[in-house]
Image 1: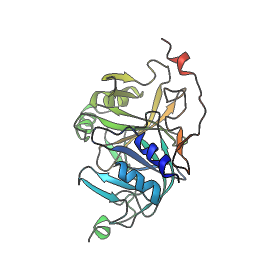
Image 2: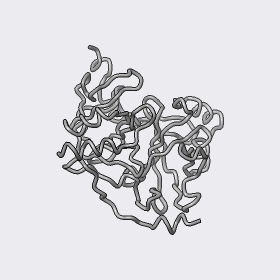
Image 3: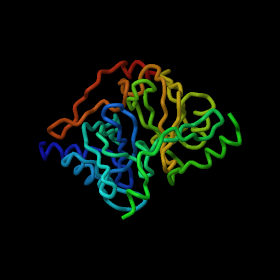
Image 4: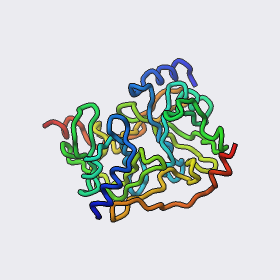
Length: 133
Length: 133
């Protein structure tokens, strides 16, 4: 990794007014979208340099590493950006499950023919157990 | 489709302060992320009811249907939402290419080992031809 190149890459990202960029985390093999979270420049730099995903939580206004509470870390396999450089796709190897509700993917609800949501996945863990600390 | 159910679903979405929700459009077969755009309630309703993706453009402050200029429409195959109901994943069949720069996917840049971006896809069309109107 070239530090100067990396800093130029970080400066070239088009952040939203709140300084954040959405990061879409997908399974590196199946390509399934597992979760979407937001990064600031520091969390993107740390994600690139450590190979584990780091984010900025809008609800908690807090810097966090995915898995710091649950142990369900994400190993970075590849990072992509789009034409506007305002969104990231991160291919990851998910340890455990991505969703804090216990599902592999946060996107466990599918629109049905009536216009309502169906739950289409099963929980891999019990959130009460994992986040009991 | 049940109109009452659909309206309840729309009311249940957690929109950002600007009234928008990000929609991640993925190829329904390969699951590749093709583009990310933003929807308001009207564009989500129209997307569900017409089976073609509609969005709200933040840069142009304008309602639009994907493909209205280029002809590169997106046929909706399935719609998912996440645990927070603040993001959508839409599986689509892409006609033509999703990116206005001519690539199949907007995510045509991959981070390399130096910390810079490599273009890893080829253009499927010439934007100057398609958007010449």
